[in-house]
Image (cartoon, rainbow, N blue to C red):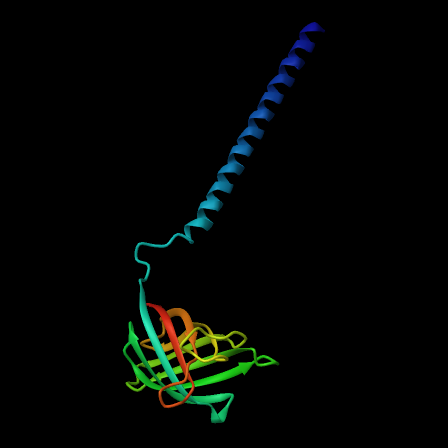
Length: 178
């Protein structure tokens, strides 16, 4: 009987040791999977060596607001882009006119494509000199394009001074990524 008890005790110890080793193996395996998942998701956020370079750009549009909220005008660019042509803008002001969301479409005269820009504008604060009180400021972002501009990205700030001819102007400065 004593031999059976010792054998059972020895068998139970072996079984318990085996279970402990399996549990340790499972913990190690789970930790390895977690580390691989973390590495997988963080690798996508690391910039690649071939990332695009930010190149300064200025986009100036002059508009006739007589057909508000769908206005037309002309635009010119300097810096990273050197194009000009026709521009359209749809203005969607909030209920009290303090903010507006605008969609600007630039149509270069050379037929190379189009550039679509979203603008978020606010008119609640005065602009710094030399701009008169009440003119707007905001930010812009390229959200689409066609032709040569299908993969163009960019963003920046904007001001809304009056042009030399007395027309409302959109002066966008920032960068594009080519």
